[in-house]
Length: 386
Image (cartoon, rainbow, N blue to C red; front, side, top):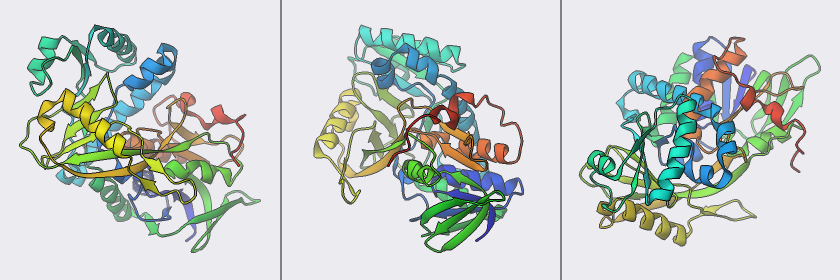
């Protein structure tokens, strides 16, 4: 299993990186401790985001939003790659970007949305304020008492059950190798450069390593004494029975956590980061009934047509998050050949651009972005978690 580049993690970032490296003629081996797409890449609600997240803007403020704003360029580039993937890998990815709507309940929230929109437009993102009348004309399925909102035309959705497997198949077709059921146990630096990764299936000698392990990325970094203040956060998602098509947009709500969209098959995917439960001893995830009820109540208040639909399924997922919400991308200072590929909170959106950037860096080419805001160097003086 020796390789030039060892990729740790079989989610969308890992699969995208494997595909990009293989297409560049670079030998790549991806290992996944469970099965491909078993984590957040396959368990998320399929939203493709571009905006600054509104709840965090309200709670963390404009200074945080301005520091976060460079991430917008990465998300926009990733959305463009999503369309390329849809054309190349087929319509099964269900890539559609009909716009994202941030809905306000009252005038105070409209002022918050306007402040956020100014920062987004300064970062190059098209965001347009909408009056109540304009919003209802664009989205007549919304509750009549909405107070207005904003539209971001580039946002949308894709199918999380199909995206990572399709990228993995494309990676293998281009020459990458993928091994599932292979747990990473330890990493040692070799005296002459490169690494030896101890795995459940034996040692792997690698010239370079890409840490694309999602919520487990901090544990992988810890094997080399690298600080990465990243945690796994349990959230949950709901899906309704099928309904006749009536909404094309990705919908958010300024008065409560909500991401809402209708899939191609007619089901409504309802999320927004509502918490799930995680057993401290086993790590097992489980649903919180109060989160199911709260999420559905918010969704029904914003889109009344959801209320009579039956809930088909709810499930938990573990997403990775950092305090500043910004991606962690690039080679770790002082550990040559060790790269981190993490796009916290919105990893499904960012997966394609993460793969492209990491492949460009490893190939010695300019990735086309100023990566200083996303460098692992910003954590150089953080403690390494025990």
